[in-house]
Image (cartoon, rainbow, N blue to C red; front, side, top):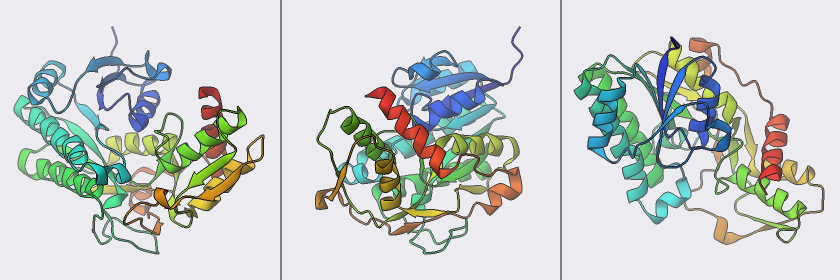
Length: 312
């Protein structure tokens, strides 16, 4: 008989969700909800169920059947730039999915702890590390949807007694990330150039923007620690505390290339309202859980590039 604790991960086939499944699998019985097939690396690590969180009745039925005690809510829209093209996607993907999940938990009468994966995009621009009490000023449809998602979670604490913890994640990268994101996209291009699959030129947008970038494996460790030790109704930044220019990330990846690579700026790749500096203060997370990043910048980029070399 398997007596390991049961956990549910929504969006389990996605980027952070799949890494969370990998992290949890040795110690938990993981059920993964997804709309797509799971990556091969995690296919055997969870019990997989096809669930579209926009289908309210299906969500209610599955929650009644599973009756989870721990829920990591990783499902949702994740791309800032793409949110400008279709505002319906982040609003449905982040707000409605969260509403349906929390409503299903409430209706099932579960005693349940939920981690909502929020985003640092809700903060106003700041040149100094941003703590959880920083100014809130969402500057994109995506950021607005993530703020609404947070508020639904916090309301569920006060109104429904659901133990919701919010993790405001700053930028993170790693294997299996959508190459529409900067670091993953640049690593993929380097790998493709090495194999002769594209010309030796990388076209980029704003290289002067600075981002606080953490390895996704450290990010999901923070999620797991917050599930164990986080206070319901509290918000926790997940951040390295170090801001690096996009240029430094690109140059580090190009420096690892096995062939010469040219870098050129493409104005079409600049996005509206691009925040110049984003860096987080994770003091509250450290004080509560003892978390600190364990994977350094160089290893993060080494592993990211090796992933794309193996994929191309």
